[in-house]
Length: 345
Image (cartoon, rainbow, N blue to C red):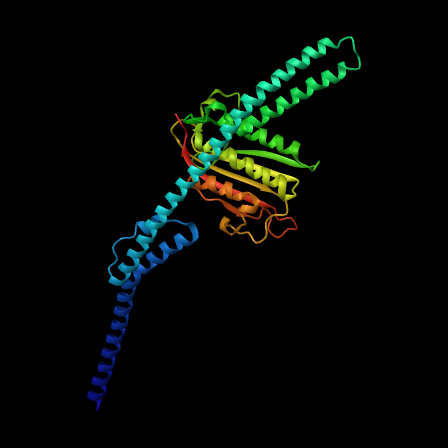
């Protein structure tokens, strides 16, 4: 009986050990077999949350046939999305180019036609003013005509500068950062003057960060090295146009009395160095109903955001739309985008 009980205990111990070993082996085999699933799920989350295709494109061969079929489908999807993104970028560039060509044509016609005729009118007004020196009733009228002609010429020059912000250098490969900042300041000043709200505030915030993200001093306009900092012309023009459109939308639709344009440059301030530009435009107006971080959910056409998004797409970036102060009576709107480039030599 003692031997039987001992053998039974030994048998039960062996069975329990075998069961534990089988359980451990099964868990290890399942963990090994399902390990690639974590990488597949991470790649899918990357596409869903950040539109990141690199994780999918970097997927290795899967040890399980079924997982390899899923990975192959994801790689094919990533390639299709990448091709669609490149096509979208190309179409946006072509649209922006057509718009700029039309603006350039209008600028030339305004300059050639109205410029000459207004100059002739001013000369005639000056001659007529000399002829009516002896007629005190007519002289103020003629001088008023000359002043009106001068004001119209000034308005046309301002319009020409908005149609062709970089003058005749639009075909150049690069544009000065100083010129871009000067134009952005002009936009801010023009917004203040054109705003219907007398207490309206519009400001331009310039932020400079080194390559490690540490705050630095923005170069002074009097610094000779500032003029040497040059951006690709297509990027400088895109930043100006989206800033122009954003401030125009605020003035027309937002009912805001505070607007802020922010330009943040990150990287070494030397030719050829990598550069990241973070752009944003925010206001404290009525905002847009039902917006989130996805610009596709916003009624873009009715609020002029479609043109901004197209220009951001043309630079290979995405436009983000979100409330400036969520939960407040006037949530406002904040548009933002990031651009990667290099300083031009």
